[in-house]
Image 1 (cartoon, rainbow, N blue to C red):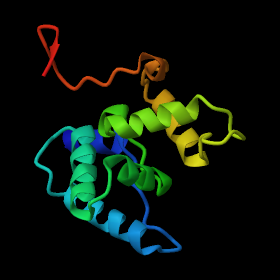
Image 2 (cartoon, rainbow, N blue to C red):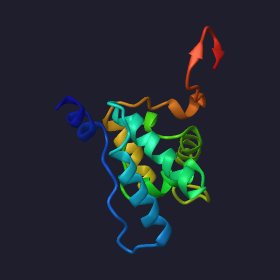
Image 3 (cartoon, helix red, strand yellow):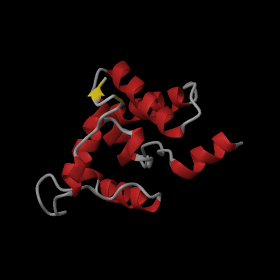
Image 4 (tube, rainbow, N blue to C red):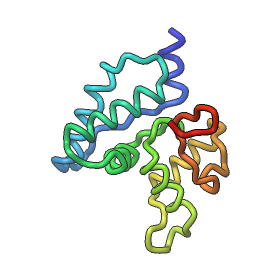
Amino acid sequence: MQQHTDLLEKVKLPMPPEMSERQEMEIYARFMRHLRCVPNSRSAIKVLSAAQFTADMLACSDAHVAKVLVDLGLRAPRAAFSADFLRFADQSLMRSGWEVGGPSSALLELQTFWNSIGEDRFAAFQGKFDLYENEGALV
């Protein structure tokens, strides 16, 4: 029961696209299908794995898949997104809304979600996305 509660508290899953573009629907369907198959109890890892699997199956970048899913309503902790998407989101959120490359409304909602679950507000300024450190060396 704890696993299901964690998934509901920390992750808001995307909704299917209304005006169905073929690529958006394919990304959504593959992501949702694979999400159930990931053998991990951490919701952020399940989302990250499903997004990476979807990107591999469709031969597109992890960041593109994450952007489409966020546009469809995915809200998850920073750990659930690839480093490329986090770099894109952080750079976009540092700009004003009217500037070229500024944040979309979905990214602003994602930032609000991150703030509500207690994510580091200054993570964008750190610019460090190490996955695992072993005795000071990146592995």
